[in-house]
Image 1: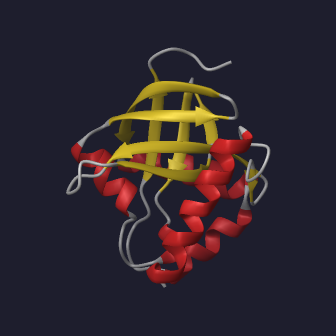
Image 2: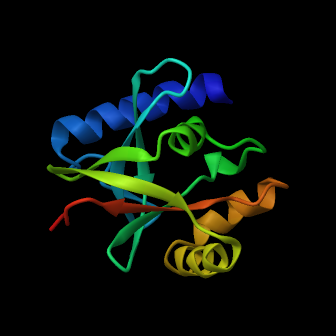
Length: 142
């Protein structure tokens, strides 16, 4: 699956970036941001479009990896280097990534699937607990 999925994600990230989110700006009814992480092995910039919800000034994303039994690469990258960059439409900001603790993770997951019920399918496909990640901007993005 990853041999097909990765090029598609790269294309979606490229289109999002070039069109300031006009193309690829929504997924399953959620707005999309572009998460930029530093590759933990390569040191290269990695860009991933992700649907998000907002909670208390943070953007919340989920590491579903389309229901795979492995966490996505971007999740491993931010665990090593939690200072990330976000693009939301035509605005960019630096942010700190924090993985939600179990109780908060449950609250965030419920809020996510209430807004985008399709995410439940990912949970059903995998035995792992899907992480929820808070991305807190260093400066507010309006």
